Image (cartoon, rainbow, N blue to C red):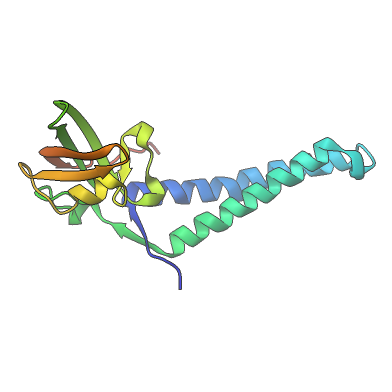
Length: 165
């Protein structure tokens, strides 16, 4: 039995788009590279062929991974997100009480996490510690450098990305 994958609507759509791209565009590009590399002759010492086959294996693995995530996804609908409580689909501003610094994070499922974009997983130390809390709550987060105190300053629904087309 596969584990349930928590995704926002945006995250689900992004995975669908990536899957479509890999199946319709990338597969064809790689097949063409393999065909061209075969035309070079002996494939036993053909680095172009080896590179193309390695890329093909990577892409096929990613396709299977995305299909598995989508098949086991539970999508958190934008309409179901309550702005009063920290949950997947909310953007949260926190104050590190010890350092008097503020941070803003968007809480997403683990499959969508991208700390460089400010998207943290609900399973991360901070994410799991603030889940279910409200504005004004103070939470303790166990980090590799010790326990840190945060106060929740703001919670809002994550704004959906506007798509063209």
